[in-house]
Length: 392
Image (cartoon, rainbow, N blue to C red; front, side):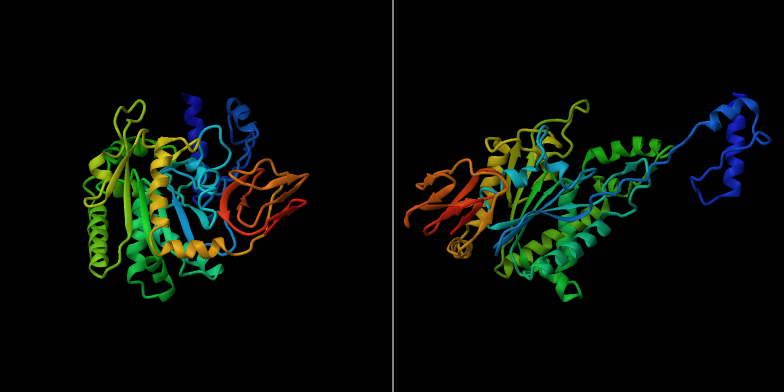
């Protein structure tokens, strides 16, 4: 006990000399430190830098002349890639499973620091700041491709759904004309376990977060928003509902589907977001047989949750009016590359001769995607593969 008190007194003196909180602590001399403390202070201490957080927009798939953007937004304590990656997999499912079906779409994922407890200082941003950053980052990303008017679909998990709703509200009447494009281009939103009316877990999580605040840095701002009695959450819900009603009266419709979890979280024994909180009246609601965390990870295309989500996306993207755009893309010549040899052709009437593929004028074209296999099939003219290039 005496040794501990001596150490604390010494650290207090250091802090008084350097109240800025710097971690650069000098090794004490024998004159200032009792002999028993010297061994502890002699230990070599390495202070590791805080890892950079993967925030901002990341493109999972791009293609020539895309007709639509699909943007994924993770939730609380999530990550723009690992949130969507199944255990044992190295690639997020939006890339591995969606790409073969929507090769004409850009697939994006957005990251933001939504941690409430970190060993290093957590972000002080609240929901409004994260939404503002997403609005600016996504607008800039789309402007760089000279396609600011391209249709846009959001797929958002948990807190990410609230961020998405706030983005549209910020974009709707923004004084900056370029920031209004996001609101004007959104055609659909998939909410996955989004607590539109809050979650009981926000109150429960505040207790351990506050306790950890003694030894770690915490930011409970995001938890406050998720509380069932949050006035800010109620305001977002009411404003978003009013915005959707106005759009419907004007003849414009944003497609919305809400997915909710069926299973409770382990240990806790309860679902994180109830069906009542995860759904919106007047819109399609579908369950996924998983808990709150696992409802957004699909390991293969046979997963029932993936099939349900895919069904909604397919219905929206192939809606009347969109089919014409896709048909125009399908009819355009295209050259694609592969980093490995061609393994197989799915549903193709082409004939392999060595490393060359030839198809008749009426045969479907094998559209080459990233990886070693042809992932999708579209109608086209004669095709020839030379080396590692598919010429159409």
